Image (cartoon, rainbow over all chains, first blue to last red; front, side, top):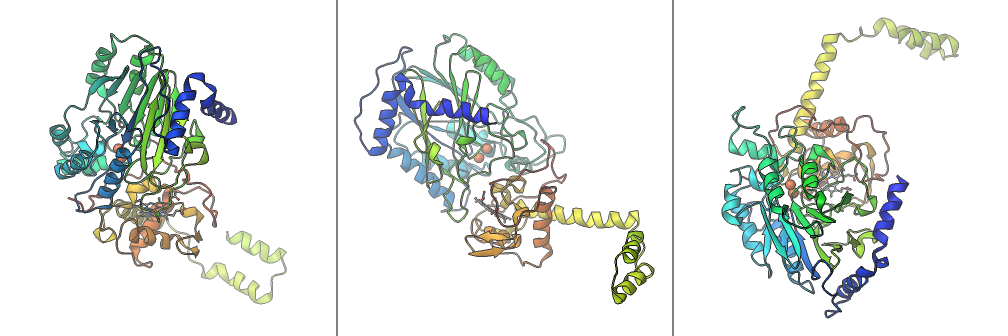
Length: 339
Length: 169
Ligand SMILES: [Fe+2]
Ligand SMILES: [Fe+2]
C-alpha cells in the first residue's frame, strides 16, 4: 500500500521537476493569480501547440422548473466562460438528463448553448434508455466521433451500451429507464462500447503514428474500478489494446461524480466532478488515494461538485485542475496534478 | 442455554430471590422457536428490508419535492454509516440516532416531509441500511471514513424488483 502511495506521490509531485512542464506550471499558477498574459510554451516536438480545454459533466437535470440542478449547471457554464485564458472547447461527459426525457435533454442543450466556446458531448446512461438515444441524437448528433485539435487527436465514444434485458420480460420504456437510472441496479449488468464502436475505433486510429497524442472521452472509466456501480467499461481492455501502440493516451470520463485518477500502461485516466451531486467512494482501495476529495457536507447543496480544466503542454503532458464549487479539495489536489 | 444458567446458579453465590427466579425460569419459559416460527420472523424482516429498499429508491412521493431519492446520493446506502450512530452531527449540534439523520436528509437535500420516527417506514429505512452494513463493527461516535464497506458482490444485491419510479415523470 505504502509503495503504491509513494509511487503515486513521486509521479504527482514531480510536476516542477520536468523541464518541459515548468512553463506550463508557471502558466497554471499565473492563472490562479489572475495574470493573463504568460509566456506560452513553443510548439512541441509532436506538433502539439499548448492549449486548454474544460470538462463539464453529469448535470442530471430534472423536469421541474427552477430545479437546483439547473442553477448548478448554469454556474458551471459561467465558471468555464470566466476562465482565463478561456478553454478552446468544452467536453460534456454525459448524464445531461436524470430520466432521459426530451424536455430534460432540451433544457440541458439550452443551458449549454450559453458556453462561449464549442462543445462536444457523449451520452450517459441517464440520457439514453427511455428512447434508446433517439431524443439525444436529435439534439446532440452522433455519439461516436473524433477530431484533431492543435496536434491532439480527440475521440468520443458511447460506453453505456448494455445487452437487451427488457424485451424478454416485456418491460415498458419507462421501466427500462428506471432500471438504468439506479446505480446499484442488479439487472442491466456491466455496460461497454460494444463491437461496432471497437471496429470504428480500430479504423479511426489505424493510420495514426504512435507518437500522436490521443485523448479519449467516455462516460464510464476505461478501467475496472467498481463494476457493481458500473464504474467500469466491460470492453475497456479491448480499447486499451487498440490504443496500446501510442506513446501516451489520456482518458477522461464522467459517471463517478468524484475526483479520481489512475494509470494503466500508456493510459492515464481522470474522472470529472459532477454538477449535480457527489458520489461516495466505493468500498475499494484507490490506486492513488491522494486523489480522493474531502467528504461532502450535505448541508451545502453544491459541495463536492464542480468542473475541471486541463492544460496540455507541447510535450503532451497535462495539468488537471479540479475547479470545485466549494472548497472540497485536499491540499494535495488544490494546485492541480500532472497526467 | 438452560443447563448453563442452572450451572452458574450453583457455582456463583446467587442471592436467594434471584436464584429462585432462575430456578423457576425453565418451567415457565416458552419452548424453542420452531423452524416455522423462525421462518416467519425472517419473512417479516425481509418484508421490512424490502420496504426500506423501495423507500431508499423513491417509492414514497412525500419524501421528496425535488425528485431526489436517497439512492441518488447513497447507492447501496453507502456513506450513511448506520453502524456509527448514535453520534454527534454538526447540523444538530448534539448526539443523534440514525433516524434523525434519515429525516434530516429527507428534509434538506430532498425538501421532503419527514417520516414519523416510530413508523414502520422508518423501521424499514433502518432495516435496509443495517442489512447492508451487517458484520461491520458497531462504533458509535465518529464516522472516520466516508464510506464503510458494503458486503455485496458485483451484479447481485438485495434480490427485489425495483419500484423506485420517483415522482418525476
Ligand atoms: Fe451521472
Ligand atoms: Fe452515469
